[in-house]
Image (cartoon, rainbow, N blue to C red; front, side, top):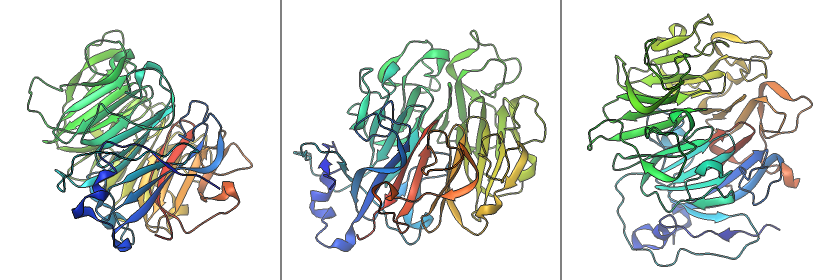
Length: 463
């Protein structure tokens, strides 16, 4: 029998105890669950150990009211009410409890307040060997701590989700390969972790163990609303739609500043503005390339293109942003970059993928690369509402909360046992199979993939 122990939270739990958020009526709350799977050798699964899990493993629960929004992160075009994305589901603030045999912890004495400057938001992000959960302005991180990537003040790994006391009122989180970043509701941007190749943007290359504020320009009043991390580069967007990038660029153009970009041995260690003709809504950073979604619903890409990851029917590097022709007239609502492949979600619920296909990550039933965007036909019977890319894998969540994964599965990062080390068509992930009690009725509302692991948030049944 699993024992759930509450983790101490700064601001997540107390709202449920205040008069304006009373849950005397069970219809006013939901239970959300956090599950993880894949390789766990660095604690990136948050399961309390270094074990691998071939199928999803329950690591935490969130008790939630009905006002949750999906955070403006992971390539989404905006912060979106959960009820709009998944009409049959509710929404949430959250009370966090961890699935470990540990002593119970409660919130204690937090100040009472019934107002919030913004909607309650939920989001996930995965780096190579670390993970993050954003819930109601609070960030929980776990996994490998080397380089300070967890932002907790040391390089000690964390094997369970740990609240970061150095960040408050967080709007979104973007984990890179070895670094991390977040924006807050007041428009501030923070970065931390490995500083190699200027990925943190502070004008130097040393590690930061704590979140450190980063100014994109000299304007103290700038309002940063979005951040994303790639393997060793980063990108951020202001409220006016200006896009900035920094980090590694060894002539592949991933930063989007043109062929004449002057680097410091392959790095730009301060943010530079990318010249875009339209305001940018979201950005996603791949291994050696970048993709952006603009206010007109158009998708732009630039950077390394050896595996056709730019979607232009050739393998030529692009050092400046340009529209992907095949989907110029397609209304896109979410973008996602993997290590060497790309995916977009359209307004009518279709998923298109392209780029490297050697591990089946395109989902087209082959191991071939895709030169241009192509619909994942095996998902045409579904209405997809959320997507994510890992280094060599892809995931999609349907309108009714089913999760499908495909791509590399050598470390079971797809969440199911397979006969091969990869899957080239989408396959449904079943939750509870690890305990011999598979439950196909659980509804997934968000997912994130790393190099060898995955994390998802589900609506618990029976609540």
